[in-house]
Length: 336
Image (cartoon, rainbow, N blue to C red; front, side):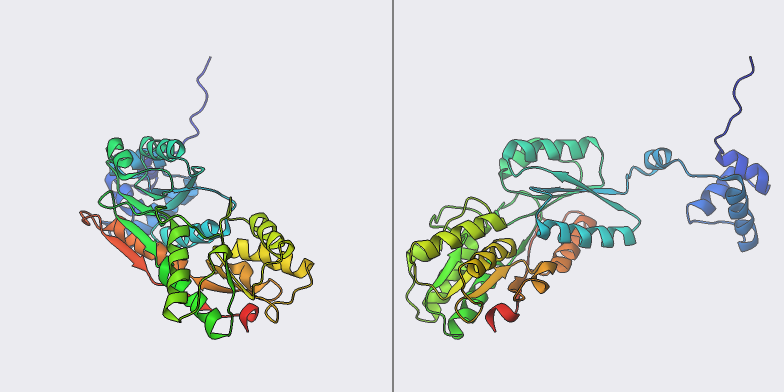
């Protein structure tokens, strides 16, 4: 029995068709031609006519690169991470690379497993939003590829990290509400614990500082801790506040999605925004432009975060720098 005909077109086939060496073909197809423009075009035409496709595995073995960057995030459904991933993917694609997303669930065990998986896949680098792991956990992995951390958990000395300015962003949001006459501002998704090492505590600190700076008494019972940062949590907590008869004229929500839940609860209770209650969120996701009314939000500048992360990946021996990206307040109808 005759062996089946070979259908895979090789570099040698292209070289034979173009009447050149394999080295010349490789140089042209890898963007490093060492031949005349006429010869280079002849090689490209031969490759196209034969249906030649480069073997990515072989290329990766030669270069030591996979042209893939891992992005480890707690959850897939949160709009903030989806928008940040889009900025990262767009910038990587301009470099001829790809973003691979992994879900960690936010637990220490899952974050460690995701980091180990990324190493096994031989990604060029890993970006990890950390919630559960601590610096010793990451050091125990012995990372041999660049690792840049995201998230508002302080990880001193572990790896390069990009933060957003949570405290200033929250301060500006609450200051905006106070200067517009609010006197009883709910911190929806705040924290009463000074020991927490996360964005909840940092945003609560901004809330507190704004009250102190503007000389407005702070009402501790209006700092509401939530079990999550989704719309359902915002809706349930706001509904309960209303049912319990709390007096409030503004809400600063820990995320936009929480704020959107609050908007629904206020509407269901017949309260008008911003006439009865002003509302501000945090993250400035695209959907803020389509709520009723449009939602005022703190913009963490996700595109700048993406740029800072990729800059850290590109620079070897960056001394575990920490970059804090400034925030701005985008004022919309919910506070006007």
